[in-house]
Every structure is written in structure tokens, then in C-alpha cells.
Image 1 (cartoon, rainbow over the protein chains, first blue to last red):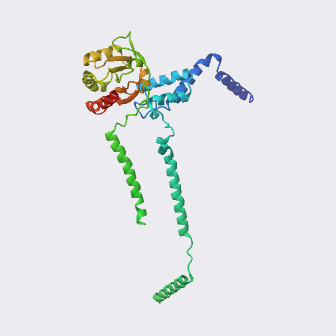
Image 2 (image 1 turned 90 degrees about the vertical axis):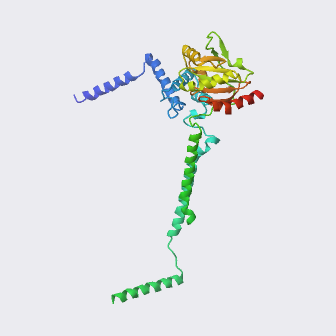
Length: 164
Length: 180
């Protein structure tokens, strides 16, 4: 009896796995969802020029609908992701891309954070070095040592005086 | 030591500078305007049916040798109402052919709109599904393209043409192209 449950469970899992295997009849809808996912993937990389703060995947603007249609048609025609993006840049400029390309006009944009990081690290290293120098135990000359001893002795004397 | 204390203030002033420039730009420029990559490039080819004569077409090639304006308009476009009288005045001066691209509009609506407000266009052509619009990088209506005799886009005006923009920018550019 105790062994019956695992057997049932195993059968159930096997049945579920078999059911989830795509049959030939379901291939067509599967590739259609794949196409939709692909359209969405590319659309998320394209800025809606009407709303400007949304991708054309999110936007319901008329132009976004048209551009999604264009993306879908180009993918169906067998164009690569790169070709679709290039097509959009040709017409709408780099602004249409959410990831601006690396070029001379975007050098500051891409290199800026790294440059700031380097400056910050340099400043940090410099501060650490100067602090470390300050923290080194001060080495006194013989003369300074004598003066210090003198001062300490005098302090001792005054304290005994006040007590007296 | 004194100079070091001034560093935060200097950094702050640099930041204020950045913000100031951005604010100034927002005041004087339309920050929603996106420069077209098509400037000085060959105008995308098209063959579209005419608004008033659906059995006839107009192609880009038909305009070869002329300096002309392509004005994107639609009956549903609110800003076009503002622009329309400027275009009617401009058309009366017969400076250049003005071709209207009736963008994503219904033919009847477009015809009715021109009948009501006056028709400034040498000819209007129909881009019902907006495909030619995409080729021209149109992202709003109205937009106006200045195209030279070699079929190159030389200038793009985004938004309604104001009398000021017409006199100060568009007309000088047209005259320069007509001379050249």
C-alpha cells in the first residue's frame, strides 16, 4: 500500500510530461507565439516617438501600432533583428533606439560613468595615502624628546603642588 | 587649504550650469523634436494615388527637377487647422509646388476638409496606412519636407508651419535651392 502512492505519483508526472510535449498539430500556434514574442522583443528596444517615454511594445499610439506591424512583417519576410533595427534607425535616427550606439557623440554618455568611477577611485586612493602618512607615529628628535620630558616633569610638579 | 574648501562649491556651480543649460534649451527649443536622419539623403520613393483622382497616381520621380514641399496632413489633425491658413496664403504666392500627403485619413474626410478650409495643395496624395509616412520618418502630423530638384530631402519642419517659420526659415531655404 505504501508503495502504491509513489507509483501513482510517477504515473501522474509521466502523464503530465507527455501531455506537455508539443504534438505536430500544435506546431503552428507555437511558432506564432514565438513570432509575437520576437516582435515584442524587438519592439521593447524601440522608442515610441510620439510618447517618447515608452517603447513601441508598451505604447498604444497609432504610430507604435504601425511600427509593430512593420516589425512583424519584416520578421515574417525573414529579416534579422539587426536589419529591422537598422531600418528604423534609417528613418527615425538613433533616438528610436533605447540603447544608444557607441559613437563620438555618445562618448560622454557611455564613457562618463567609467571616467567618474576612475576619478572617484583615484581621489579615494589619494586620500587613503595622505591619511596613512598622517597616521604614522611621529618620530621625535632628541631635542624634542628633552622638551617633552621637561614639560611632563613640570606638569607633575604642578599637580603635586596643588595637592599640597 | 582654502582652495580645497571651494571644491564642493565649484562642483555645485558646474551642476547648476548643466541644469541651467537644460532649462534654457527647454524654453527655446522644442525638446520633443527629433532631428531627422534623412536630411540631405535621397527622399524615399513612393507611388500613391491622388486624393481627388483615385485612378491616378503620383510618384517621387514625377517631381524630379523641381524644388517642392511635401506637407503631411490629416483631417483628424488638430495642429493642421492652425497651419492651414498659412499654407493657403503660401500657395497663393506660387513659390513652389506644395504636395499634400494625406496621412492615415479617410478619403471622404480629407476631401471634405479641403472643401471646407480651402485647398492649398498643388495635389494631395493618399497614404492611407501610413507606410510612406514611416519611410519618411513621420512621427506626428503636420510635418513638412523640403525636397530639391535631385530628389534629396534638404529640410524638415516638425509641427505646424507658423508665418514666422515660413518667412525666417522655410522661404530662405527654398530661395537658396531655387538659385543653386
